[in-house]
Image (cartoon, rainbow, N blue to C red; front, side, top):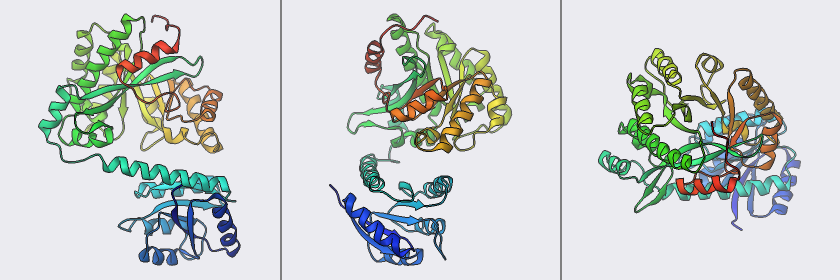
Length: 399
């Protein structure tokens, strides 16, 4: 077991003694204590810690102020927060830390138990693994020609993550997700190259490539008796191109495919220069028969007005609302409200990022339509997805 150094910020003497015993029982930590945020910052300037665990409610410098100070350090430790206040306060403070770029290893409601500390250890292990993975992926060093060559020669591929029905458990759709099968670096995840695709003005090229590979995969599956809808991410600002919808329709017709078998997920990390271009593009996609999804609903700037004023067919619930919903009643209530709204608007509701059977149980209870996430399957290659379809059992009905 890896042993991590942790600095605990807690102003109550009893809690020092209690937490020392809990950490000793859990194992895997070397523990130091300070009484307040100012002392914590002084201690961090004197030595390295793997984790800072802080109470939120403290005199002088409260936990949120400590988070803000911590983010100013050149190499801050991972952070965990604990409080006897509401879970919403805990989650909100965690969002402050994440938005400031801090690594959050855990959010703990008091009283702290041995299981909580063991979960902290697991969180630190995962963060260390992510850091190693990220360091192995070079960024910002690829030329436009290198990216174009990868797009044109089939290195940058569409992989498919299944969406399962929460009503009967069968695979009913998929999402196409991009992967780079690099000849020297192995498989690269989107975080390793998507920014470079964008900065080199190649998002349109990527979109048409993903659509082309998706249509080829659908044609193969159709030969086996499967008519499977697939969704593809569409950066919203591309709707500024007046001819985009027509080009996408021509591409689909080249395969003699049906537009209704493709759903475009509008991502909110960008926006059109003119709001009229957004609505014109969205409406024309629907007029041509394509499906249209509001991606990552419940995160960022997605709004109810945008949802009801855009002709969406699908509502994708962001993973931030799904993860932890089995133990957080506030998240479960929010999911129920969104699922009810989706039904009232006639939308298919899809929950992203499900990771446990308990989360699946919550999603079934609120009558969400579909789910995708690691508990179902990671994104896999076209051939591996074909095997998933076969293993799934009976053929879906012809649409």
